[in-house]
Image (cartoon, rainbow, N blue to C red):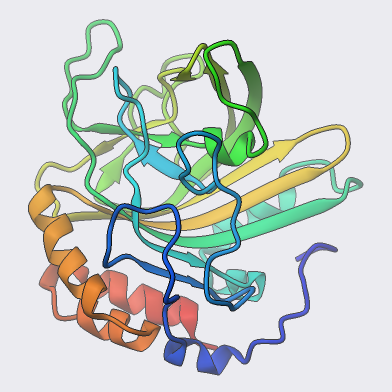
Length: 280
């Protein structure tokens, strides 16, 4: 997987028995599940975004007046050795995107989001109420000092893979929706106290109880290439988020989390996929 792939000291077969962090950081959910399988410790050692305090990882949100992430119920930092368990098309794009001569870092997360707040699409002649956006602002600009005067803009390669419960939207637009089963550049902007633009959208199935997908983002600078992969689980409605949260809050380790999720009928496929990713 390239020069950045660290030698893992953690026995992969023991992952399911690891206990969640006792001290939570950057979350409003008292029952949240946080754990690093890359750097085990009492708390997550992931950068947090200035002022807001949420982690600098891939987020999901709904573009509008309050364009902020649906904060995670579960955040697991994964060792990159487990990337081999992911869809082959994603792995191909992971390897093939960016200048191979540059130093590269790769991050891998499992993220259970809270439910998004529905809002009408802001695009002209579109009145969808079931869209959400990939939000890479915190991940792309982890060291920025956020205030009303700051302006930052860059392009990020991004795409989603193996999607369940979501479909493409606005791919006919320049800098439009997030690509599926491939990557394209999308603009990531912070300006005057706001996250922008309205791009990288996907459409959620109104009949689904949960949406799940993998994401890949690649940010290339003259000095380094940063890559991030995430497996996203997104409850479609608040009632689904509540059901998932009840399981999450009771789980003390990964085994209990996977077992508990398998008792929810619409989460059985997610539980199987998690088990595959988490075991050797």
